[in-house]
Amino acid sequence: MGAMATRKKTETTPPSAKGGRKGRAPGKSNIKNHTLATTARIGHPGKSTTPPSGNSGRKGRAPARVEEILRRLDVAYPGVRCALTHKDAWQLLAATILSAQCTDVRVNMVTPELFRQYPTVEDVARAEPEEIEPIIQSTGFFRNKAKNMVGAARRIVGEYGGQVPGTMDELLTLPGVARKTANVVLGSWFNVAEGVVVDTHVQRISRRLELTRADAPVAIERDLVKLLPREKWIDFSHQIIHHGRAVCVARGPRCHECPLEDLCHAEDKTWSTVGVRKGATLNIGSFDSAALRSG
View 1: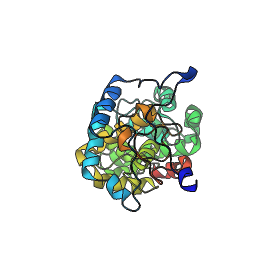
View 2: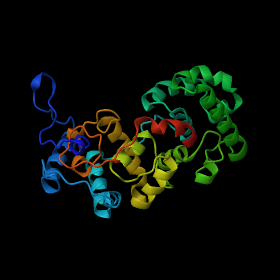
View 3: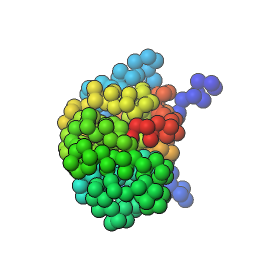
C-alpha cells in the first residue's frame, strides 16, 4: 500500500463537472484541437509510464521534447505580449516595479492614475516617495516600491538623459531593478533577448515541465537559456505566463485543458494520461521570499 499511496492514479477520463456531467471541454478551441491531435500522435490516453529512477531530469530536458513544448505553445498562444499596460519604456519599467508580489490586473488598475498625476519620468523624479505611496498602496510593499520608483526615475534623468537605458548592465544600476524587471523591459520594449523573464508562473511551470530543478529565479533562468533557442526567449516567457494564468494555475491546474498534458509528469497534476514523477513540482510559496529581491 505504501508504494501505491505515493503514486498518482492515471486516469483516462477528464474529471467530472458539477452535477455528474462528464469533463468539460477546454474553453479555447485552438488548445482543444491541438491537445486531441498531439495526444493521438505522441501520448496514448491511459498509458502509464514508470517513473525513471535517476535520469528523469535529463529526459525532461531532451531537445526533441523541448522543441515540441515550444511548438505547442506557439499554436496555443500565438502573438501574446506583455500584459502590463504601457505606452513607453518608462511606463513599462514603472509598471514592472509595481508588479512584484502583485497581479498584472491590479497593476493595470493603478497605473492610469499614477501616470495621470506623473506623466513623465521627470515628473516622478521630482516627486517624493511619500507622494507616490497613496496611489500605489493597493499593489503591496508600496513604500519600498515608491522609493525604488523615485530612485530609478532620478537616476534615469540624472545619468541617462531621461531615457530608459537599453542594456542589461545599465538597467541593473537602477534601484528596484534586478534581472526579471530588466528582462521584461529589454524584451517587451526594446525587443532584445538578453535572458528569460522568470516570474512566479515561469518558475512554477518550468518545474512542472522538468525544464529545471532549481528554485531560485536566477538559477531557473540559467537553466532555461541553456535549453531554449535565443529567438524563443521572449515569446516563451509571455506564453508561459499566459498559460499559467489560463490553465496551469498554482492550485488545481486544469490539466484536462492543457496542450502540454501528455508531456507533463508533474506530481500535482489533477488529471493525467501519463505517469507522474516525484519532484516535478514546486512548493507554491517558495517563490514569494525571493520575488522582491529578484526584481
